[in-house]
Amino acid sequence: MNVSIVTLLVTFGVCSVLVDASSLRYDVRRGTDYPGNDIQINRGVATEAACWKSCKNHPTCHVAVYSASQKDCWLKNIKALTAASVSHPERNTFRDV
Image (cartoon, rainbow, N blue to C red; front, side):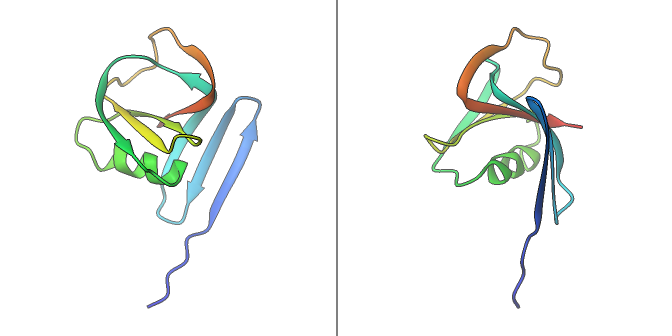
C-alpha cells in the first residue's frame, strides 16, 4: 500500500498552524524555546511533524521544542506556555491549538 502525507503550513508572523493528513494541528512559535520541564530528548528526529507526533504519543507531553539543525526534539510536560520564553533562532516550539 502506498500512503502519502500532505502537509500544509500557514504562517502568520512568528506563529503558524501546521495541518497534516493525520489531523495533527498545533501552534508553532518560531525562534522560541521554553527552557525546563523536559520529559525527554529525542535525537535524530527528521522533521517538525515527527517531533510533534512523538509528543502527541507521549502521555504527559503537552509542548515540544524542535531544532532542525540538530535534529533534536525536546518533549515537555507543561500545558501552558506561561514560563519565560527565550529567543533561539534555531528552535521552534509546538503546542496544541
